[in-house]
Length: 176
Image (cartoon, rainbow, N blue to C red):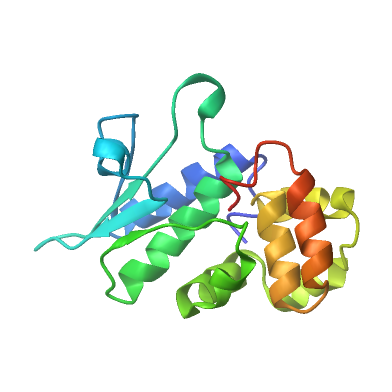
């Protein structure tokens, strides 16, 4: 509810970071070539690190300028990383909505349920790309995250999901 109550997607990310840090989970937002996500050709969505005192989350922000990671993707990734910390899993993660079947892992499903509860999500009944964009604004995630969620909830089929994901401008690679 706190995430959805944020006025903008950027505000949702900030609220989530404050909540995690208030609970002794440190969040480091990356800068290109200075964080593990972007060193020496490594590319992944984020990373959790176990520490003797507090867990760390490394969350990429993307490159400066036009290549900044969308706030909706950061919200999903940060929530996923928080789920991993809660489950005691410390590892890098990568997610790409061009392969919706990869969302079947338990942690991804938990993350989707936290951000887009099934009962509330299905009430929207999104069908068109405009519907998915509106639902994404409501849940503070990317439109591609809502498309994958609809697919996982059997509200749309693979063909429809693929068609919608294929027309999202510049978002598919950084989908969720």
